Length: 271
Image (tube, rainbow, N blue to C red; front, side):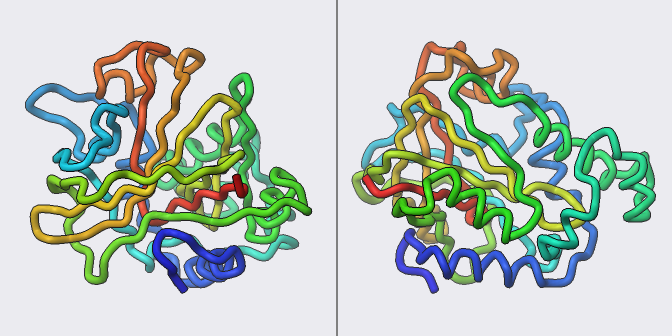
């Protein structure tokens, strides 16, 4: 199903369908670690999940840096709902109390915090020049992506590819080959969100973004075909965004980049 870092569009929807149909164990601890809560850090106590950010100066052959590539337990992937069923369930922060009762989730539980986080992110007004949507079914994802690119437009799905038996989430990696720019007129990034069923948060920014394929090798020999993006203009970003504390830069001062984990899907239009 995989051909390097590129995926056939039909295959990627099938891949998501398979993931969505796997049994859900309602374990949100890992999702909460990366998605919920303030990322407080000190020099001696740094959240390992923050080792995904870097600057364009780091993107060069031979560069070594610690990178966190999260491993998703497939048994914890939320199940996928048909479009007809998903549309019958309210998807709004105003209905959170009802939703917690509907899914039999305690209001003080990590699952409740995860649901609140997802609904809040999905309801935030987009920044200037940003397009965003949350897809609550694969059918809605299909139609929303085609609406974004145009039904007559040509697009591909790309993603990070881990090696087989990948087990180490954080280690030092070295860039083995010159990073390759993935030329695209439009880029749409989609991330799985913590929720009782499959929800994908997708967003795109009009400002310049540069997508790269980066081949890195870990200290233990793991070779990852990584997808990375550099956001050229961050002047409109929230000054409290964790990336500015990690990289010690101010909004608009420098382009910021990050690696994608394997469960993120990026749709690109042909250049």
